Length: 304
Image 1 (spheres, helix red, strand yellow):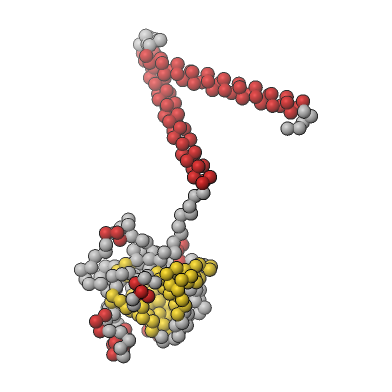
Image 2 (cartoon, one colour):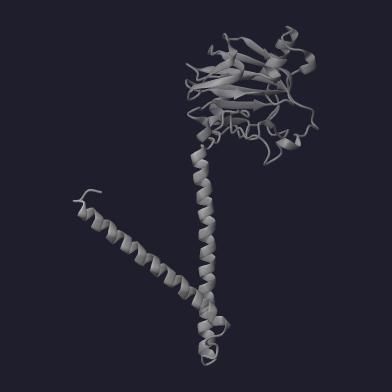
């Protein structure tokens, strides 16, 4: 515990460079200030998958001793000896949203819990109670006493999601995983522009804001506005054409001594005059209707 707390202090003052030390921040964090330290293998939180090798330092001796202890006591198998570690330090209110560890990591995945005794929520679907707090609608709450080791394999590691709701106090977790082979490459669907972005500290969570489906009336309104926009842009283009043609016609008339009068280039001007006449007629009609309405209102004693 003292080793982890010391490393977090070093990270806060800049002695540990990114991405060895990270702290959740930004709009997605929702007040979550969980601190993370990575050893052995870098996990790319923005792409929710293993990142480039060599970006974080190897296991320190204290972690190597921990792994040796877990294997010698048959908690873990030598065949899946962990070579990647993420240490999370939680404060009151901190959390980790529902997620599934990337499929490229070997199973099982183990997590050692220290200090706090927050339960791990495991399930396929979750309901958000409030910010940073979830309840499994199809799953269960797994108690995690201090110094307990949770091993996720089979469906619990491949299918079910897991999360920690807002902590009631301080908590430390040490998650141990075996990385994919050095020649591993992400699937085409995970490449830039196609991957699910989780944001720092969210490990590809599905708890992202989703677009709300439009109602029928909203869809009709959107379609109507789109149609009106097309007509407006079309009329604007026509008016520009008329305006530019009129200018060209006036210039030609000036330079040629009014030789083009009554010919082809005067047509756009006549069209513009026609449009102006139509607008004036419409304005007069609207004015007459308004006067008739006022007169009818006055005749009825002010009643509409």
